Length: 174
Length: 253
Image: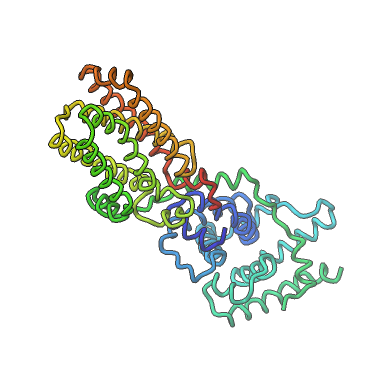
C-alpha cells in the first residue's frame, strides 16, 4: 500500500493504517533517538511519545511533507524537550544500555569511542551527522526535519565531520 | 558527498533493533490514547434522504411493475389465487432490494466509503429502512387496489404477504453474511420464492394455508419480524469498514 493512501486512511481514523505507520517507522525513529540521547530505555519512551504526538497531530498533517521527515522532526522536538528536562545528565551515565555490533573487545572499544565522539558533538551537529550518516538522508530532507536552511545543514555537517575526524583520528587510521 | 571512511567508522556504533513486543507496546499506547475523530452530526432524516437519491431506478420500476402485475391478476383470476399469488410474489421485493442495500458494501468501493462521514453501517441501515418501508407501502397499495377489483380478504392477504416478505428478507440477510456476491444472495431468496410458488400452486397445500387461523398467522408475522431484526443486528456488526474490507478480500492492508 502506498504511503499516501496509508496516511489518508489513518487521517480517516483507520486504526490498521496507524498501526502500519508505526510498524514501518518505529525502527528508524527508535535508532535515531537511541543515538541522539544515548539511552535505550529513554529512547523507547520517546519513540512512543513521537507516535503519540503524531496520532494527535495527524488531522493537521499536510501531505506535502514526507512522512519520514515529519516523524523525524517530531523526534527531534521530543528529544529536545527531553534534554531540557534532563540537561543531558543521563547521557554520560547510560553507555552500557546500548548494544554494539560486535562483541569483540577491540571492536567494542572502537564502538565506544565512536559513540563518545558522536555524543561529544553539539546537538545540532549531532543531529545532522546522525541523519546523514545513519539514516542516509539528503541535505534537503535534513533541513526539513530540523527546520533550518540547507546552507546551515551543510555548515553543521562540515563542522561535525571535522570534529569527528579529529576525535576519531586513531580509529580512522586503523 | 559522504565521507566513506568516516561512515564506515561511524557504523561501528550500532544500536539494537527494537523487538516486536516493543513495537506492539507502542501501538497499544498510541491506539489507547488516540483522540477519536469527531464526525459532524448528521440527522437520520438527512442520511435517509441522501440515500434515497442513490437508489437505482430499476428498484422503483420493479416495485411499480409488481403493483401492476398483482392488480392485473386480481382482476383476471379469482380471489383466493390473488392472495396466494401475493404470498408467492413478495419474495421478489426482497430480491429487488438486495442490490440496493448491498451496493455500498462492495469491495471496489471501500476506498471511497472509508473517507465518508457516514459509516457503512449507517448507510446499510438507511437503505434497509428505505427498502423495507417502500416494500410495505407497495404491498399495502397492491392490496388496496386488488380489494377494489376482487373481494379478497384484505387482512388475511396482507398478513400472508408479510409472512412471505419477512421470511425472504431474513433469508437475504442471512445469505449476505455467508455469500460474497449479490447474485448468490439473490439466488437464495429466489430459491425460496420458487419453493413458495410451488407450495401455493399445490391445491391441497394452498387450501390448508388459507384455512390457518388469523392469530397464528399474526404470530408468524411477529416471529418473522423478530428474526429479521435479529439477523439485521448480526449483519450490521459485519458491515464495519474493516470487516467488510477483510471479508471481500480487498487488499487495503
